[in-house]
Image (cartoon, rainbow, N blue to C red):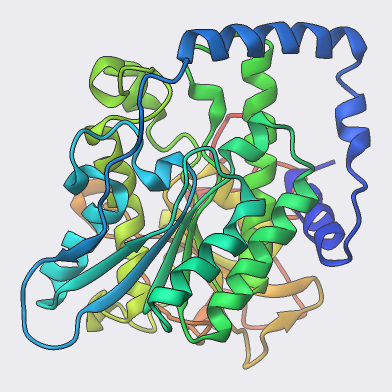
Length: 377
């Protein structure tokens, strides 16, 4: 079963309140699970818990007149900043400083992320944040790693995430979700557990994307975005536990999220508004499940709602656009800045909604020139 189909199935199961994915685990087999449990125990022993807490990064960042932007951060240890030495080194703080620098306005950061949290904790985190900030301008979520390591049923995890996104959208907030990172890059994890965690991570990230876009938010694929850099400079990119990022690692993650946060706020530059996707950079409009599968294989990709021919949905579900906002070859920036589901000119890519000419997702998505976007499985 292709990743796009698995993502659709997981999201559909989440929407209708079922479980239904136990069969995926059965494929591993009892012997495999025994080996995996031993490897997981060894990984936990190596990683340990070297940090007592995460930095308190809440506060007002930047300078400028007027009412501050209200930014809320939810999620797990990556959102909380475990591994960073100083409050200003967290993902939330880095995003806050970036938004302030780009807009000339202060940013008030409210961080309700909790170390060890899973998707089931998000609704409580959001409720807590809304007691302080009644209408955040944007809610940033980083979640999924603990759902994988604790083997939470993916449809259950996705349902909690979707409920949280819908709640935030209901109060008028934009939502940007950094999807589950690729846990197959973590050094203390050995094979075959590493390969399984990579697949589980990617499948969860794809399902998260479908659910978030259906709920009106946008996602940024973190995947193995930092994999090559982490492999080349592990002592620089990882904190001392070799699991959580260091300040440098968090800065890289924040750099991937910041353009999408700014686009959600409508401040990513007027020259990028309503720009059609650039196919040479792997950008495209298609069914959300296909877009999700493509984004998983292209870390740094943003997926958000869009319209084709004035319609939000096509024969195969919600229309979505995949954008590459990070700098591309030659420093050119692949940036589209549609916000909140506005039409992005996607009709130029698919003028006939019924044509639905995007790959099915059963094979690797095509990149520029029709070549595979990523050779990884």
